[in-house]
Image 1 (cartoon, helix red, strand yellow):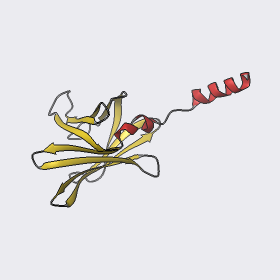
Image 2 (cartoon, one colour):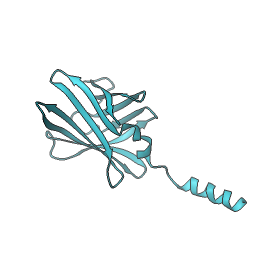
Image 3 (tube, helix red, strand yellow):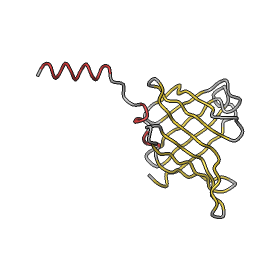
Length: 149
């Protein structure tokens, strides 16, 4: 019995939990309203275990992709990757702070945004904002509600 207990303790000390499991609450489809109509962000787990997302709009039955998103785990830390038409390729934002309800990603070398924050409000609401280098600088809010798990 002591050997099993020691083995379990040893494994738990050297096995890092998957940081993507902590953010599984993000999986699903989220909707927000804007002056241009409804906008959506959808997230799913891909075959490699990363989270893949997409920001899109639907108008007159046509879907327009606005951005490609990924959350990946590298050396036990999360990295947010955004692929938007304004950039030549993906822009990476390493995580700088996280809790059960908030994720903060930063890339101070990027023009804008420099910070992306996801705040979970209960099970069905999500506030996301982008901002500049200083807290609150050029902050833009996006308020979502879950429409599909």
